[in-house]
Image (cartoon, rainbow, N blue to C red; front, side, top):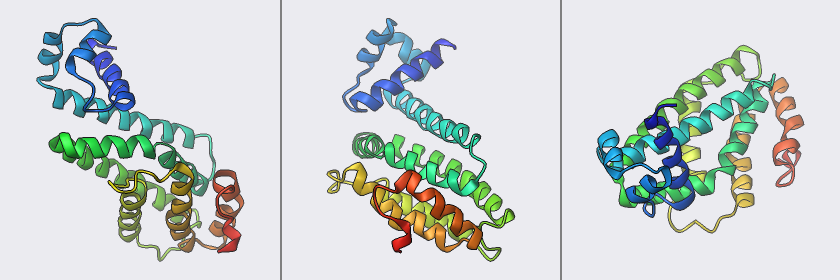
Amino acid sequence: MTQKEIIIECAAKMFVTQGVKAVRMDDIAQALSVSKRTLYELFGDKEELLYQSIRHFSLECRRRRLEAAQSIDNDLEVMLTSIRDMVSTAPEVRRMRRNMKRFYPAVFDRLNKDSQVNSDSDLREWIGRCIEKGYMTKTSNCDFIVRILNESVQGIIVIEDGNERLDSLELISMVSYSLVIFIRGLCTKEGIDIIDSCYDKYFGNIQPIDSL
């Protein structure tokens, strides 16, 4: 790894665990035993380092999801694991987004645009495979599905001020009643059977899907 990559990885961990506002350039320099001047020479300012660090964190989360999906044969089960993964990181994501939107709005906007590009690409690929394999109906509209899923994630996973008290179980329940059920409604009989058989494995302690 280059010095820049090492700094980005370390800074990402610090921003995620300690908070984007709390971590100073001095703290990062001290943690890495480098001069603050080095940080400014490589990144210009804290906002650029913050952007590259959180982008690295987001890409690593995405890489782990895609890597985990390689060991699962069924695309609908991949969907459930991805949703569960998003739920598990929701508290960190909410806190970071809230603080970035308040203190670093320019970084917030840049990261939002990056996330949208990757999210749309992944969703389109996943939906295409599900339709091709007969898990979703051929009449499923890819653009519509991508839009609904993205808006649902924004409204449920990334919860704004006033709802910070929602715990992970409540979030999982909300996801179960929205994303999973929405996707289930687009499925063929084969797809519905697959989701029903996998549901308990990931969300069974929240709401049994056969009660819908």
